[in-house]
Length: 265
Image (tube, rainbow, N blue to C red; front, side, top):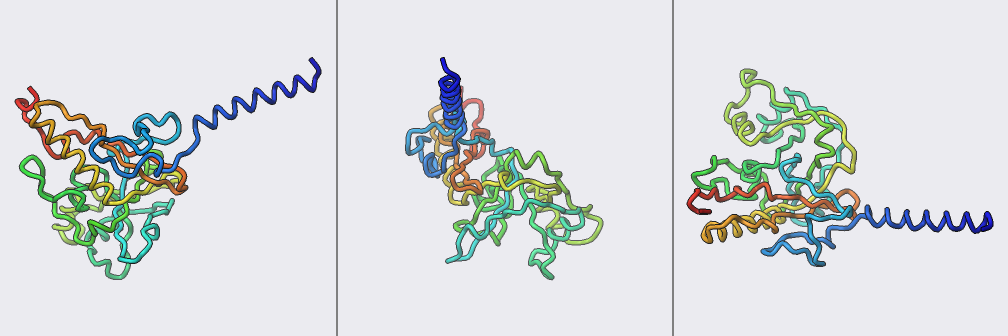
């Protein structure tokens, strides 16, 4: 075999390998997976959201930080997406922001919440009073339950950040505000992330997945079986609209109903 043919053969093999690698890691937009779950959990193209095969990332809902940012009627929702990559919160700034509800003097900084039951109660994704099994949480009045963007710091970014708790309560300010913030885990952050560590979805999508989970939990409760949470997911768009992340809510199996042992016996 000539040198030229040998090189051509090597090149062809490289192209095949490169194509295979690209196929494995090729990005996919959220529109191809689906935006909300419905009752069945199936994507529009029959894709399994929990089996990305290298085409998208799957992250647990409990593993990220989130900020809820409402937008005005007529405003482009993309305008309220949080994109900052530098976080420099101090305990004093965190406490000052918590106690400055109306942002007098425009000194407040952006705070974050962990994704948990209380956070969704606080943000009006679910009702503030979920029944006797849950602590009653007063919702944040400034959050619009129909027009709000969730800016999500993915686990890749969370690992780079340090949580900054508010300065102690004996340093002045409203103890009521402080207690509310402590109850839901509001915190500041310190550190640097990259634009790829952000993903975005809407409060309506979050409401839909919670409704889907609730319906399945309720059915399972009365059928005396464990819930099948194949519908417990939503998609979130990254900064590049051609890249998508699946948010996995299967850890929220007891989100609404906490069945007594007899219910699954």
